[in-house]
Image 1 (cartoon, one colour):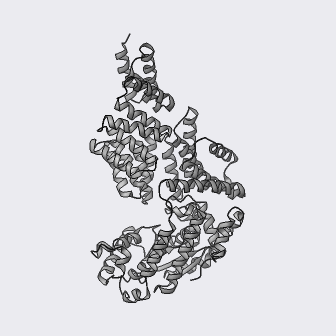
Image 2 (cartoon, rainbow, N blue to C red):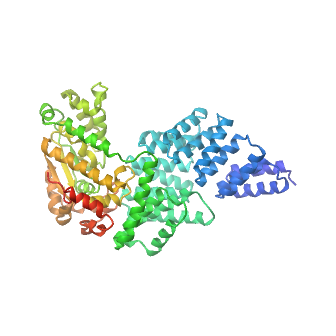
Image 3 (cartoon, one colour):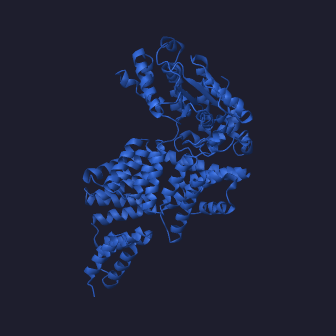
Amino acid sequence: MATTSEAVAIAIQHHQAGRLQAAEQVYRQVLTVDPNRPDVWHLLGVVSAQLGRFQFGVECIGRALAAKPDWAEAHSNLGNVLWEQGKLDQAEVSLRRALQLKPDCADAHNNLGNTLKDLGRPDEAVACYRHALQIKPDFPDAHNNLGIILREQGKLEEGIACFQRALQLKPDYAQAHNNLGLALKEVGRLAEAVGCYQRALQLNPDFAEAHTGLGDALTSLGKLDEAIDCHRRAVACCRRVLQTGPRPARLHDVLGKAFGQLAIILGKRLPEDDLTAMRQLLSEPNFRGAGRIALQLGLAQALDAKGGYDEAAEHLRQANALRSADLRARNREYRPAVERAFVDAVIATFTPQLFARANGFGLQTDLPVFIFGLPRSGTTLAEQILASHSQVFGAGELPYCEETLNLLPKAMVRNDTPLECLRDLDRKTAGYLAERHVDRLQALDERALRIVDKMPDNYHRLGLISILFPQARLIHCRRDLRDVALSCWMTNFASLAWAWNPDHIAFHFEAYRRLMDHWQKVLPLPLLDVDYEEMVQDMEGVARRIVKWCGLEWEPGCLKFHQTQRPVRTASAVQVRRPIYQTSVGRWKNYEKSMSELFSRLQRSNFGTPPKS
């Protein structure tokens, strides 16, 4: 018969090989013979947590620490299990204790980073991950976790580099493949993203997050049936795991996101069984994160399609309240005073005198087309019409205009803000910026006669666009602001801080109207106003006008925009795969009672109809 030391060695072999249940069984057998083994209690706690039995894991590691209170590794693992339970404050205490005992413990720095990230302290988390990598440069988990935060902060290329480094160190790292897929999707490299998700699922077929990510990428590619299948697989994976016992809150998070996407894609076709399951999931205690927000917003859209407006309104109220609270907790709440000051500065900068002085600057080219307006005002639909033309490339929402503006201080060798630099813009700098911008556009498609950038908030930058590209085509999408407000209220805009609070929505709309009124007075370049309501009533007439405005011959294929196979990476990815529908006009009337204060404010400000240019 094996000695206890031999048995522990066998259990550790099982543990390291991933045979977790076999390892657990041997650890238990050892403790039955010799319960005074803190090392085995510690290992049993770790493997129990890996099997999803978190509270038992905490108790086991606690017994180990009772015998060895200054054991840094055990404090670190206890903190990690508490983090898995969502007990973030307790986790931070345990992890900081581990680092007091062993400051060069890379695992503890990494685990503390995870905890601080979930506590809404991303900068501290980044510092922890970087400290872990200083101690242990070849630490794939720390590279992966650092990439997650960099991606969430919008530093996508840096995040991609972190995920790629993690995969160099650990090629079979399914989580890093999944995270790389997320980042690649966000920069528009959808085919590569699909490959990453598929590789993650080869490594772990029950990886629910990868199923959901793949579903999102396929939705952007217009493969809705395949996307539905992916989200259903994600739901099935989550349910199988949840049936085995308690799991971390983020598993409910993944389930909520998968259900939410199913609801958005299926709409009124969502089966009643799914509705029941979604309502049941909402009753789960401590289900409060991003998954709940995604679930309630998706459920609201399905209920709206089925005519259940009152229940939809309540889900919208709860989801937006949660998101607003989250933004406040992370100090990322929308600040109206900041937007007011920005609009004031733009108006003060772009005067008739500036445009007169800059006349003749920039680049004479017909290549760029800019479609802009408020989110959910029809920008994606207008782009899809143009992208269905054989001589047009629809590039989606490009950050190029903002990046070009932010390059001004460097290009002019000044320490001033971009707007301050614009007041002294010279011909040489304008030419350089315009040529650089066009080179980036042509790299997307060298053969296209027109390349469309449909970044909605480019209405902020129309002054610079007019100076750099005096022959550019500008298309302004407008829609009844009550319908825009409702659509934003129903959409999971992770990057728009103003869209979750009715007062903020109204203020943002006011700022938009003020800026568009200014451009109407001073902009030297003409723009085409496209009203969403008219598109719905007379699709062919509006489509012909858009194509003509861009200096192109009419092609009937532009009316089959919903059949055009191209990536659509916005919240409208599902809608533009369908023929135009009338129910989106005047949709706000179904929520007149629940959103009466906002709608009244919009009307009092004369926002009830699209602005006239």
